[in-house]
Structure formats: structure tokens, C-alpha cells
Image (cartoon, rainbow, N blue to C red):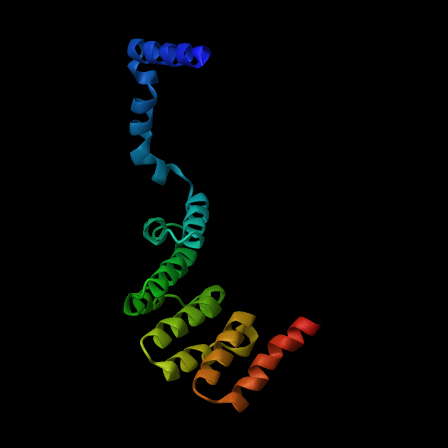
Length: 171
């Protein structure tokens, strides 16, 4: 206890003698720059972690800060996911509109479908998912399509789509 008190006093004395070395001044100097000093990949990882931990406001801010970087495509997908989760379907559709590269086709379609479903456009969700070519249809796309078809009461149409997932799993 006494040693801890002596260390605290020593830190305070050092800070008063050298203001640049004080923890509060160095923290305040780096706080504003810290978010932008991270490289884009690190900011993307932080944004994804914040999204997974339900820190939607912070995740959205991080994703938006990446729109003018090489990480713009995954950032757009992240923003759209935040917007869908937080009930802003129209904004999510706007964010997804510019995405056209093949790598983002499937995840964008799933997010579009979720946004369309949340506003009651189940047929639009089906169209968004069916627009993905079979060669790019990931398990997430097929699962979402099967779910949309079931939601429409079209079990006979959903069954072969969902069975592809079972077959993939068994192989």
C-alpha cells in the first residue's frame, strides 16, 4: 500500500516537472488522431469487432471512415449490416446500390434481401437473391433464398434450395 502511494507521488511529481510526459496530456494529444492513425485494415477489423459486440454507433463511424480507402467495399457491407440491424432499411439499400464487384455480389444480395424483407417486400428480397448467379451463390445466399421462399409459403420451391446446403454439408 505504502509503495503504491510512493509510486503515485513519484508519477505526479514527474508530471508536474515534465508536462509533456503526463498521462493526461499525452492521451488528449493522441485521442483525436488515434482513429485515423490506424491503418485501414486495422480500422476495418475494429469496426467488425464493434459490430459483433453490438457497438453499432461506433462500428458505423469506423466503417464510414473507410469509404475513401481500399477497404471501401467491406466498409459499405459493414455499414449496410449496421443499418439493417438498426432498422434503417432504406439507408441500407442506398449504401448497397454502388456495389457491383463480383466479390461483394453475394453478401450485398443477402443484405439487400434482409433490408427488403424488413420493409415487407418479400418478393423483392427473392428477386435480389435470385439475381446472384449460381456460380456466385454462397451458402448464405441459398439459405436466405430458402428462407424467403418458406416465408412466402412456397415449401416445394424452398426444399431443393435448402437441400443444396445439406448436400454441401454431407460432402
